[in-house]
Image 1: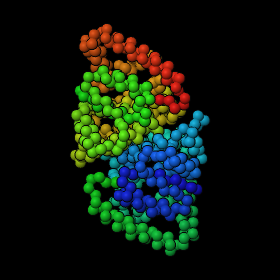
Image 2: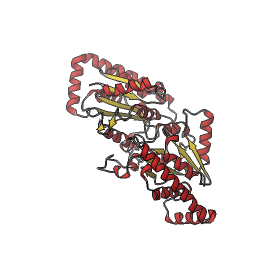
Image 3: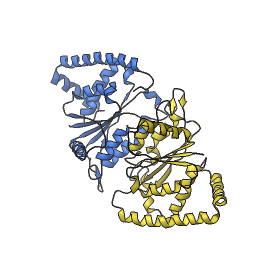
Image 4: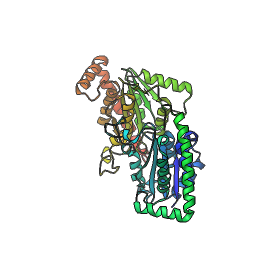
Length: 223
Length: 223
């Protein structure tokens, strides 16, 4: 299965969350990491992006929640690349058979996003435009992968995210327990138990470092 | 009451809906029409826009629904202009006392936007991010003014929109029947009944023309 990860961020280099995800995605055999940069795109860039969308079995839109939506960069990319004749036409969606994933990170705890919570609305409700977009283009939508307060996660939570994100990029049904178990078996068989354990340990060391750095940098505008 | 109308459109000059709204807004005494253009904004442009937001009693975000959301231009403007310290801080929203209006136009009939409808989701649900943004910044949100299939409206519907849009820009409570009645009384008294009737007639003539032009141009991508 080929996965296209479309990443929109105002300051990608400065995002610990995105750095972590990028390193993790690099371990997934058949995934393309597409960072959105300068816009508007040239005609050639649009054609390339449309070919990437066509070639993908899974399209993952990945971004921090900004003003309760995707960053402007993501919308600009969709406006330029996701046009009539490429993703839908009069007969319906042209992306039928593919899946849509959303990987959304944010700086507030998940408990803030509920009725009566600090934000007063669920993240699912805020992502309604993406469900409509999936419907329009024929994409089957996966439950979004929500990453709240990356900088405050424990090492164990970082390790869990490391696994879940890889599964999200590569499993037909990332929320299926059976497929998750098979994935672990494959990983162990393909890389050897030691390598897997090493990778996890390395990542935990790195995330501890990140954790500390980010805590020092935190000053209101968090993600 | 001073109203700031922030207009985001991919092709403003080509939009009959926006041309109609612009001419109508010009009749409202204390309204500023702000068309979003090239981005990113310069530091000076950001400062000007922030001053405009601070000076407004009502902020109206106006756009066609594009991929079930506001166009990228609107999000880019919000990212640059609506920042911590200007629209909210640690103590809460800094726009308290102001109102937020949304004027949203789209090419499908309103009946498509419901459970079981062609789009399968309500426009209100798609606008959830704006309700959250209002909550965060202290703005009181007005019911959105939805404009479906402008090109297919009857003359009477265009005349109704002409009135409702002016009321939306200028009445403290645009959905109050008492305030609507007072608004009519004021218009008649201020401009004279003849002038008001003339204006309506002119606009109906113009909209008939627009109606025909747009019908000829219609080819799939409608708004």
